[in-house]
Every structure is written in structure tokens, then in C-alpha cells.
Amino acid sequence: MIQKTKRSIQWITQNKTFFIPKKIKYAGIHLTAEFWNGKIVEDEQELKEMMWGAAKAAESTPLATTVYKFSPQGITGVVLLAESHISIHTWPEINYTAIDLFTCGDKTRPEKALEFFKKELNPTKVEIKKIKRGKFTI
Image 1 (cartoon, one colour):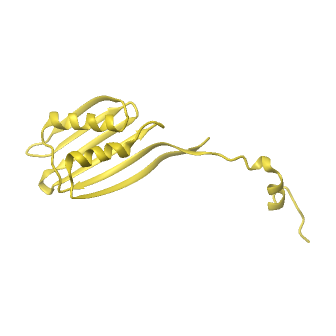
Image 2 (cartoon, helix red, strand yellow):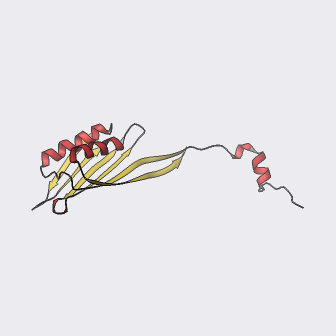
């Protein structure tokens, strides 16, 4: 004989107060992109302007930009956003550019920044990973 207890499925399904739907949200979206065989930016000012343009394309708020040029080649740039950051690292010797776009908030569109970079750098091969970060329920 099956007896209903407070832990049994029958009791839980009858008491709807235990099934309050919760909405899953994330603190931010992190896109990583690998660009192969495209334009390699080596000019610091050009990279700053490109990252600023990508931030605007993502509907983000750029706050500051820093770029470091390596010798003999390669460049790294980061734009600090009110909504997180965008970073770029280049390896001209293998015709490779790595891009990270991490944005938070409901208004940002990191995919648009990625499209901006694709248009500017014109890579022949692109690999993208999307990570949803900071899972929580409301």
C-alpha cells in the first residue's frame, strides 16, 4: 500500500505553492573569438579606434582603452566598459587574432561587436565560443 507523505510526488503536485516558477538569468555573456588569416592590426591608434567602435556597436559604454605593442611584433589592447571589457591579442607570425568580449546587462549586444570585428579584420576562419557567466534565479 502506497501512503502519501509530504515528500511524495502526489503531495507536491497537489500543493502548487512549491512550484513557483523562477527565471534563470546570467550576470553576463562572454564571447571568445579566434580569427585566422585576416587583417592584423599593428598600429596602436588604429587598434584603440577599432575597439572603441566595437564597444559602441555592442551598445556598451567604453570608459578607457589601453594598448601595448610588443617588439618585434604583436599587440594587445583592452577597452574597459561600464558593462565589463573587450580585449584583443595578435600574433602576426601565425596570422592569428584572439578576441574576448565580456558584457553584462540587458542592453548590451556582444554579438554586434563581434560582427564589427569580422567586418574590420575580414578573417577567412573564425571560431567562436559563447559562455553564459554568473547563473542566478530571480
